[in-house]
Length: 157
Length: 152
Image 1: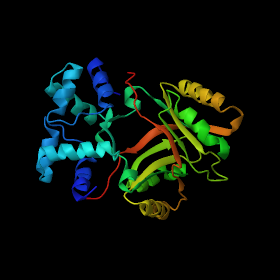
Image 2: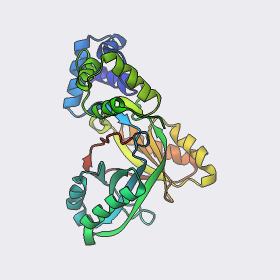
Image 3: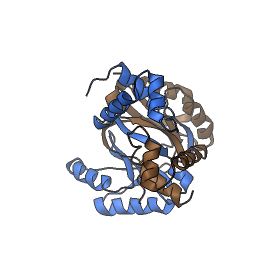
């Protein structure tokens, strides 16, 4: 990562240009040869700085109208083994261990599920519940009701 | 909500994969979908414009650049919900924000270039809104892959 990589990030964090040769357009903007833009982007993908290049759909607009953040209170000594199993469920899109904030927030395991209805999400949460078994001490599901912002990363120029 | 046709659905599915890094990436992808480069560019523009797609480009993992992503939440009084939303969203460090049904009814992701930036953003939101912010940094990632096919 150097200043040129940083300039490339600032130039692309809002999106790639919708023109036939987007990497050429970026090169023009940054004063770099096309090949250099592509080489650097590929290096950022290879090193994991870029998770992927692609589009993010609005879940609601493509029919996934129920989006639930399932949250679980699982004993600390069991959470890693169980978290790995829950993350491996085909319908879980994100799964993390996070700190509790007692007494307001007793949950340390978070797993996102999506569906066309709350019933579908709730059934998926039920599958997680059975996987956790007695290790689950408390749980909840927080449905999103509105996207308030979805711009992604914005670092300063 | 706007209607999607089979080609739109195919574009949405293909665009959630790895976009090519080559001189004419849209042409390369259009060939796989079976449409022209022009049609792909027009349809992609429309999907973004209609907010069916919220973003298209590189997804950066700020942690790999020395920064941090942190999930955070607050409990906004209903009477102040819109005002608090505007105050929170005004920070460029807020990458996304969702209303959720819970006493903690606003959940947002902070993305900052340095780990210290998270504490600053949290302090700023607390000062601006007068509400306590709960930060839930990830301690362990078990799985992340957000790919959903269009169901409409």
